[in-house]
Amino acid sequence: MRVAIRTMSQRREAAIELSEELGYPPADFREVARLSESPLAVGQRLREALRVSEQEQQQWRNEWQAWRRWRAAVENLGVLVFQFSKVGLQEVRGVTLPLFPAPVIGINSREISAGARSFTLMHELVHLALARADEEKVALNESRADSDWQEVERFAEETASAVLISQQMLEELLRQMSVRRDAWDVESMRRLAKRFRVTPLAMATRLRAAGQLTWAGYQRWKKDWDKYVAELPPRRGGFASPVEKTLGRAGRPFAQLVLEALDANRITAVEACRYLDLRWDHVEKLRMELRVGSGKIREPLDAGD
Figure 1 (tube, rainbow, N blue to C red):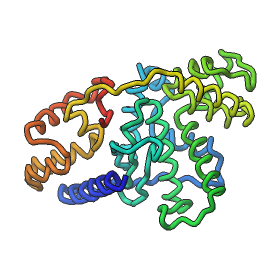
Figure 2 (figure 1 turned 180 degrees about the horizontal axis):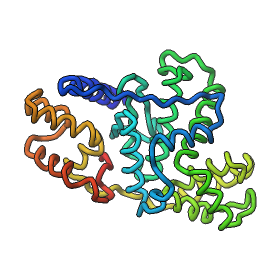
Figure 3 (figure 1 turned 180 degrees about the vertical axis):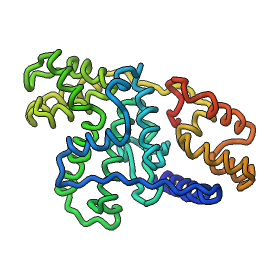
């Protein structure tokens, strides 16, 4: 984990330096959130900033397309989104480096589910917005008690689910399904979650915040869900090429910035390969992928492993 944080920090510093070399202003994240606000209000505001419409969301073909679109939307807000590997999910799913400008969100690439990555991305985005409003500090400077941190985490969870699952679309689908309060089972939750390209767990969090599940009902459903997940056969990730690994871990904006600096003779080929963690014979393949690959949808792409 320390190596992952060090790598992300170095990439952030490189991004700032290269932007200055090329005459670009460093990315500046401006969204704020306060714990005194309702998670629904903050979630709606963040979704508007991300500029992802309900119509677009309904047209996504799968969770991987959703993940790539949410990631690009967050990057457009001035956030560097990286992925890291070789860290167990039991240790961390996501991390935030609340350093401004050019803050960083890191996602654990061992998370096979693209929907889970999208939720973690929005969860960390909320933490960034809290830090931007001075409602949260870096971990070493925080003095909150565990119970207070649980409230912060609950706020981040409910807000993240509100970003991914809009109120209007949710109300419309709930009318169509006509499921009574606390009567949700695993299969009905999966059907509803699929409409939003999110995980059933994220959907349950959203329904709990919307009053469709009480805390007792949520706990009962969560117990059934954990049992369902435990009985699933193990899944394996697909094969990713070196270029796909670079795009997954470093992100398209960072890769594009490095190549632009290379073309402008601001850095050497050796430096470019080090920034990208990519051999020179794959750099032209990366350039081609950045040029023509934005419209392709393949599961391994942006997987990070």
